[in-house]
Amino acid sequence: MSFTGKATYTAGSTLPEMAEDVSDIVSIVSPYETPFLDHIGDPQRAAGSTYHEWLEDTLLPNKDVIADSSIDSSSYDTTITVAHGSRFRVGDQLRAEDSGELMLVTGVNGNDLTLIRGYGGTTSENLSNAQVIHILGNAALEGDDAPSVRFTNRIRTGNWTQIFTAAVRVSGSDLAVRKLAVADELDYQKQERLRELLRDLENTVINGAAPASDKQGSASVRRTMHGIIPSITTNVFVPGEDSFPSGALSETQLNLALRMVWENSASRVDTILVNGFQKRKINSFITSTRGYTSKEDTYRDMVSIYESDFGICRVILSRHVPADSVLLLDSSRIDVLPLAGRSFYYKPLASAGDYEAGEVIGEYTLEFRNEMAHGVISGLTTA
Image (cartoon, rainbow, N blue to C red):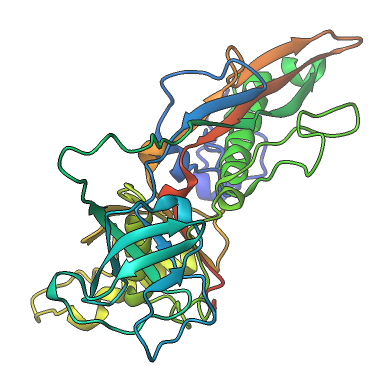
């Protein structure tokens, strides 16, 4: 080619001698992170069936509630009715919630307890319906026969697997042409579909629910796993209900919920899973105590780890948590398991024409052990 002497600024980008300048990077803006799955990590085992089960057990309860609407709070009744009389034995020492009085059980008849009030020189106090009664322990008689056997039964609980799938199809021409920033269109489509399925897996683990009937699935019913939020039934805290403080998320609410989970189980909550709105509320806990000098040029306003008396919790931000909810989780009791041989993989399909086809498939379930070890604050304000 002969020398023209033209400069690039006189040539212009539309002239035939100018090559296109396109970056070799495809930029994706859609969210595809899986912070919660990354936090709990890969499981150490796989599920062996479409219905995955595990065993759970509890100790004998050491507390109950008074179930006697006619109890006379102005006198010191020596007979009270409780919700579960089978939890008590003659010789049990009792203490009512928020009371310094001790009581001794001298008789158990169904749900009716006969008591010695003001035991051990303590002062008798008023009792009320629905008040919690704690069993301190049983005092056996010297030389007495063994008491009747009491025990708990291990229970089997489980969850169904759910199939996640996405189709991939690329024409022969599309495979043949040279692409910008993409070496192989089929591989690129596999990666995109896998990112989408991983995103959907995290969303389902948090929010998904099993069908009301035919949970095993059928030709007309899709098999779906039960997620974390629908699985928590014991420690559900709703602002303004059951004496739980109302209003926007506060440190008082968070600490109360952590304490109640701790009181109800041997759990150590180590994960607080939140959406962006409640994450900002948690960050605001430190606002009043934060201070800066004139030499500092970095403004920090983030809480990544929340330390309380009831656990050291890592605060995880996930788009998939409802904006009005805060999940309090013991991650040691959570696993997301693939069905054996069914972790995400690409399966080529037969081609009936000028194209390559396949699908990305994975089948997973949530093993959510001891739902009482977790909690959720739901119904928080979001404005």
